[in-house]
Image (cartoon, rainbow, N blue to C red; front, side, top):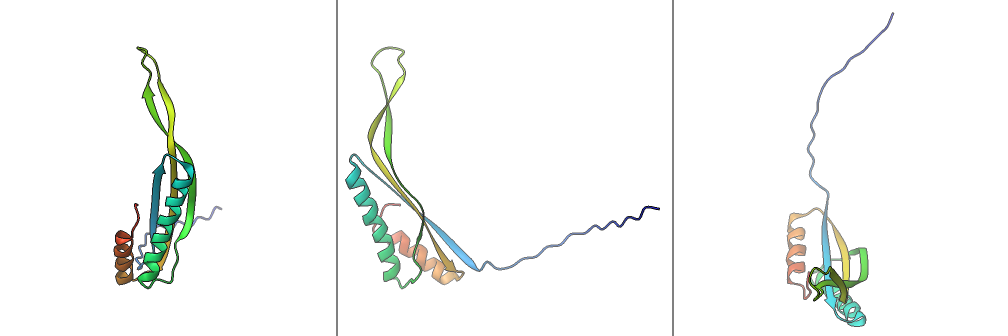
Length: 121
């Protein structure tokens, strides 16, 4: 004799978030490698300095940092020719995240601070 138990149901639960995560992406371009890296370092420091000056103890965590060649495409003069990829400089990308305990006031302050920071997002 086979025994079977069947159960059906649904549930729903709602909780307040306990952590806010802000992603910050800095992207800088320059024709030369060293100035590109230097600008990236200066803008990263501007973000950190703005947060410290606003009273935040939390520091942004680096998720991805890269410096890569930047390319553009040009058409060759010959009719029907393919486009040619040409290096036009470098691009420095720095992706960071800032984790905060969930507090709407502090979250708003962090967003305002980042928006006013002396950097190019």
